[in-house]
Image (cartoon, rainbow, N blue to C red; front, side):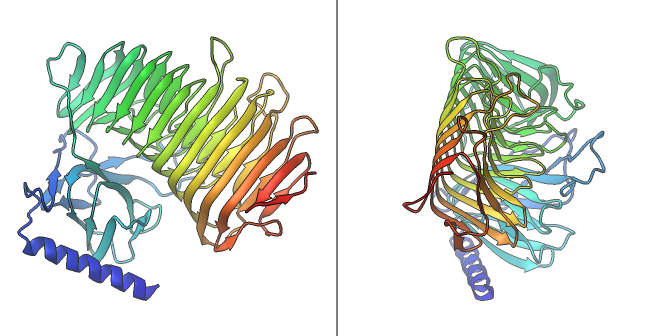
Length: 479
């Protein structure tokens, strides 16, 4: 391991030297690297824990609060306030990070071939970014990290003055509530901090930019809309490029909507409980891609809250190419508070889960809902000794109106790797009764701490009312 780290450090220093020799300064040399930064307003909550330069340009660092009252001081405070910074880039870029804290033992999560790190001294490190990426710079684990968001260059930014554009330039703005209708765009320019919640209702709606939508002025559950971004009865909606901070309740919620894309969105939450990251409710064709989600409550929760209208199912939901961090609850919660007939055709792929506490994959349908065709592939998890890893179990819980379990059919885990500290990391599969059972579950190349999950694995718990549980092509008999 030490040899590998030394090699990575040498490579990083060589790359830094090569960029400097080539005359790169972080400016307009398109063949080497280009950086765009967005100066912050002095009126916002900035962080003094880190100083950041990208391509020789100063990058302002923002602060994010963790556990406001009434949650402050609880046993589930997982690390305290933290920092984040945004910039845009094209081509290889050197990022310099300094801090009064010791950076000697800094870890980067997730590990990526797009990022090379060299520790210059106890308070300075250099990163070479080969391409846009999102990383957590962690001198001391969960305690006060720096989240770096290196975005691609912004394209096709709306123009101020367009009658269909609600435009916010650099600075702090406090509109509190923004309502968007058909054909409208909300644009948050880089350097803008907009203290508001957004309600989108209609078709062909965009929410975009490099600014921050901030809910941290509101106490728990007291925002004017109810979600930081509420998408209601809408279609063809895109949320792209912005940062969301300090939601007072569920953060980004498409409900009874279809054809929703959430791309390159950064969620800096954990200020309150019930701040779920993205909750598609009774919606179809939702794509969540290239995002970073940190929340206190579930990162992504799929819910079928109601059963009314032409189609209240939760269908064709994809979460991909993203980084997920949940302080207290689950990474993925599927099935709670759900009374739709179906939750199906769900794809979770190419994801890095860098911190979690409760079961990261919790599938618990109730109210006769059929949960089927779930694909979970190419997932990398950093474990810190947790008890549970996967739970597939129809249940009855306090959120249900019709007190009967649901069904699970067709769940496929493929190329899933959990590494890190020793722990139980239980995999639990159990039906509720002879009717509400679990069928057709496959594990292909699922590894826990270097050992492939198989029928005899110590982590595995297969209970009653299960059928056709398969490990790398071999089927476990039903019970």
